[in-house]
Image (cartoon, rainbow over all chains, first blue to last red; front, side, top):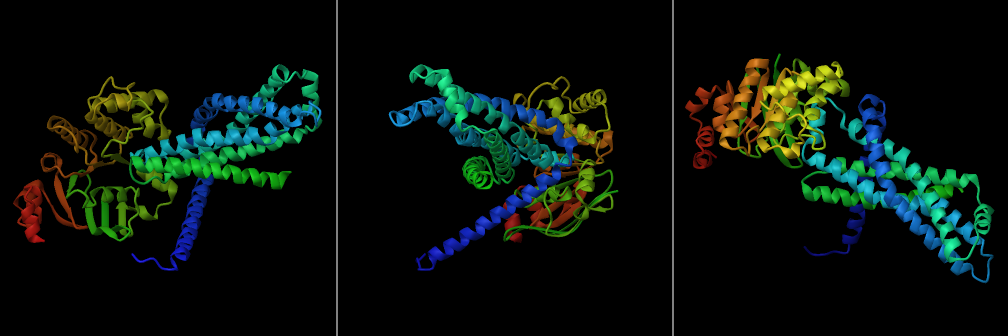
Amino acid sequence: MQRTWTDPIAWVGRSAVETAAAFGRFSVFGARATRAIADARTWGRMLVVQMARLGVASLPIALFIAGFTGIVLSLQASYTFTGMVPEYFVGALVGKTIILELGPVLTGLTLAGRVGANIAAEIGTMRVTEQIDALETLGYDPVSYLVVPRVLAGLLMFPVIVAFANAVGVLAGWITALNLLDMSTPEFVRGLRLFFKPFDVTFSLIKAASFGVAVTAVGSHFGFHTMGGAEAVGRSTTQAVVVSSMLILVLDAFWAVILL
Amino acid sequence: MSIELHGVRKAFGSRVILEDVSLTVEEGETLAVIGYSGVGKSVLLKSIVRLLEPDAGTVTVDGQEVGLLAREPLLELRRRIGYVFQFAALFDSMTVFDNVAMGLRRQGTMAEREIAVRVRESLGLVELEGFDERLPSQISGGQRKRVGLARAIATRPRYLLYDEPTTGLDPVTTTVIDRLIRKMAKELGVTSLVVTHDMQSAYRIATRIAMLDRGRIRFVGTPAEIQQAEDPVVRGFIEGRPELAQEAA
């Protein structure tokens, strides 16, 4: 087909329509999930299972990442401050950066890969193998049964994981400062307390809860609307990870503007 | 009490699958719907329980128009209809027992001990006693279909819808499934609608056979009547002679 000068304009128009349609579909899905919260008899017994699968099983990878982040932050802070800023500022930088930003965001991005992909692949496979249709024929609302417990588990468990990740990150930074930077515990703690505000923890956990909802809702959405076979499940999984990762960064900026 | 379809139309994009389908499934009968692959037999079945929404026409079950039902009455209606999926659609993370118990747990009218009795009874009806604790991945394709049937009958539905129940099975297992379909009709008194393209199966199980072709019901009659049919499209299909159908087209 011959290319014309209007092609790029048509592409922009098509993309805008597709994006608007995608937002529309996600909004309808969100409204359906919100309505399904009333059906506690269906999702109630699944909630604990999902909290264990999404939360407890995700702890090791989240703590691993937080630990190494704390080590690197401590070393980089010392490298940056040497000769210009008192050494105890290492504690301030490690604590503030972990709690406000890296704890929730790195954990969120990691769980977008682990939890978001898992949800999209699982629900997508259930869709293409007619298991979701089977749920409907047995009288279940599949949104109540599959989506609501996962989103609620994300809402409740992401803050718990992030709280542990924050603690491990700071702990790793402190151990690094003691062993590799010749700092003492009082020095590190002095820095840690210098700019610390209790609100920092609240801010961190609010972000984590919103990331939990975003990752699980996006994963559920793409899984639920999978059409086709194995290739479609793969596509849904990839889309879920990409979109939820982008959403985490958007939410990160959103909360910074709103709350700080 | 019956299932009635009037003027049902369903298209996916520009591709019209069902043009104008009208069909009645009478109480107590086993009606087999036959037709070429891709002709819309499964679409027809899914329209009855509103897994797919027809673009036009009406589907009525026990006098209730399915398309007009709100969410809760629709879920309640679905509990009266057992659905046996083409590839069983078992929940692969659950044991056979839990798969069969799903519908009963949803109903919420039985204690767990009564559910266990009903599940074992249903597994007994499909001759799968002792399979309770196995996972779907640990049983054969034919056994999976039988578990799917046990799950569908566990709630003792009034209707059973079978989507290609014998596709992909060896001849012996096919006969076993056919016998089970007859047994369900006889022992449980269910009204059945069976979608199939296996003529031998259709002759064995059906009290009436309907042929779906190019979006419409082309023929309805008893197994004896369809074998006497003169319509070349019907003859071409039941005798496996595509040249007859092509000539008619």
